[in-house]
Image 1 (cartoon, rainbow over the protein chains, first blue to last red):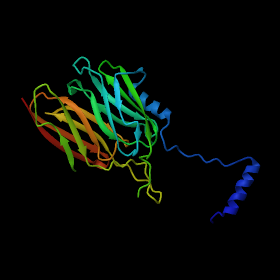
Image 2 (image 1 turned 45 degrees about the vertical axis):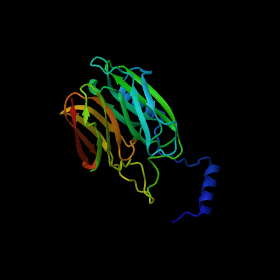
Image 3 (image 1 turned 180 degrees about the vertical axis):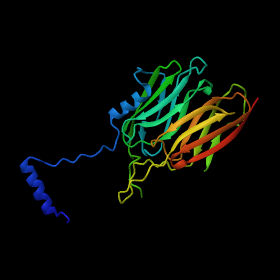
Image 4 (image 1 turned 90 degrees about the vertical axis):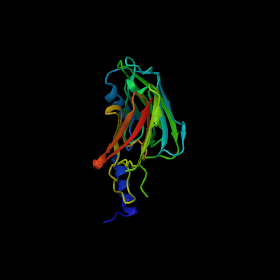
Length: 155
Length: 105
């Protein structure tokens, strides 16, 4: 049986009077800062993440979140004794906090990776580099997105 | 599957060269719904591996937050003439390979 508007209002009104407004909880469709932190901890463990060395190039204002150019570079001599092992990129508000993990080595010559990413909302992007001495360095960028990606309806 | 690889044809020994790759793939996130509410299942490329004469020089784990038709650029040192081999692996048994040659003087 379909609930009519009149029935719905009378039920809702009754519930309000009784002080028991039915609560509807939905699973959040975006990652939360807690998920971002958990994803970062998953990679760095208990290690301290310092700010610096990493440069995150990404446009500050994006019209279309479906394809956002991004370049991460790390100031490193890239020698056998001092190089970047990996670069990890995270976001704050997409449905999932990971963007990509990139594994380099001493023979990479230059610690720089470019790709195109999706951003579902105006948010923060975090890039973390793991150096050969197992220290972690990070850079963050705030990006304003006017057309969101990832969760829109298919046409 | 179509892939576009950009590797310099020639390089001097010790040069740092840029490698650019582009492959065609929808990278369906698994978070989208059709107009009638059904969830569109995830279908993405999960990794790219690049080998230079058999040695792995670069590897990437990709997530739904990578844009459709994944583009990746990275660097390596030109050590010797030979072949770069690229391998993309993804959901639903997706696998694609490509290669490019380089002459090092």
